[in-house]
Image (cartoon, rainbow, N blue to C red; front, side, top):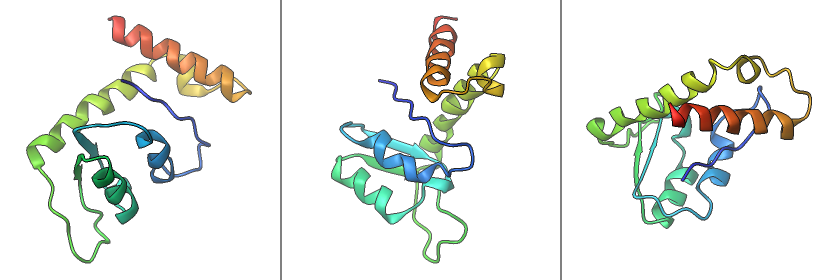
Length: 114
């Protein structure tokens, strides 16, 4: 299952994590240090999933994470790199969020079909 949530460019990623996880039953949640918050970890535990989140350097007590599982995060990074090859996605010419998100979904489908 793929879920995309559009946010303003100046907004951080972590506040959208709750919307991305809501209603899902994942086995693992793999995320970078930007998502290292107690609230996200608690939501992951509530979903009965394993949190594989690299600890934020500012965290006083570092949490452990599975380094081998964390390496799989590159699949997501490559996906976003691939959809940004589409000019309309990379530059966001669309004024309306619905139109832009439609092009993002279209680019995602084309990348998946490759």
